[in-house]
Length: 361
Image (cartoon, rainbow, N blue to C red; front, side):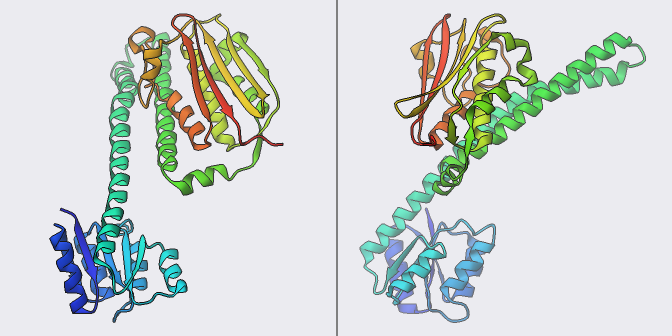
C-alpha cells in the first residue's frame, strides 16, 4: 500500500482529500502546516506528498525546499494544490521541482490520475535503479573475487614462505600479484564507468549533458589508443584506415569506445590474425568498424549480447564479464546512433557504429 502525505491547513479540504484517497486504498498521513508536513515526511517517508501552498508556520514552497535539502526526503515527488491559478504561481511551483500543480477546487478524478501517474513514474525509476544495483552488485562480487583471491593467495604465500623462496620464485609471485592487481583495477574502473553511463542514460538531463560537448579529432584518438602498452604485442596485426573526422562527442567516451572495441578484438583473436580498424564518412555519416579474424558468433549468440553476458567464456577462457560491448552500445545509444554486429562463426567478428548527427560540417 502506497503512503500519501497530505499537507493542508484547511481541515475540511484535508478531510475530503484524505477520504478520497483512502477510498482508492492509499495509506494517508495528514499534516496541518508546512512545518508539520516536513516533520511527518522525515518520520514516515511517504511515497508522494500532496500539499497546499499558502499555509501558516511555513508555506508549501518553503517546506518543499527543506525536503529537498534532506537526503532522506529529496526524492519524494510533490503535487501542489492551490487557489493560486496565475501562470506565474504555477511556473514558480514547477520551477522549484514540483511534479504537478493542481488548482482548487480540485477535481477528484484529476487528483487521482495525477497521483497515480506520479507514483507509477517513480515506481519505474525505483525498479530500474534496483535492477541496475542488483546487476552491478552480483557481477562485481563474482568478477572482482577472482583477481582479488589471486592477490590475497599469492601475497599470503609470499608472506609465510619468504625465507624459503628463491629470488626467481619471489619475482614470479610478485608478477602474479601485480597482474591480479591490474586486472582488479581495470574491472573496478569498468564497472564505475558502466554504472555512471547507465544512470545517466536514464536521465534526459544526463544525456543532454554528455551531448553538450566539443568536437574531437577521431583519428588522433584512434592512433593514441592503438599505441597503448596493453595492445603493443598485437601492433603488427592492426590494419588502420581512418579519416580525420571531427565528431561531437565527449573525448573520454570516444576513447573508451575505441579501447573496448580494440580490447574485444584482441581478446577474441589469436596472435598473427589481422584486426581491421576502419573509420570513414559515407552519405553524411561517420562509420567506424572494428573487425577481427578467427572468431565469430552465430545469430543466436549475437542476440544474447547484453549487459554482463560473455559469450563462449568456456571456449575462450578470457578475463572479464563481457561488459565491453555493453559499454560501447550504451555510448552509441546516448548519442542516438546505430550499433550493429556482423559475424560468421570461426571466421570474423565485426562491430559497426554509425554517427549521423554529430559530424562537423
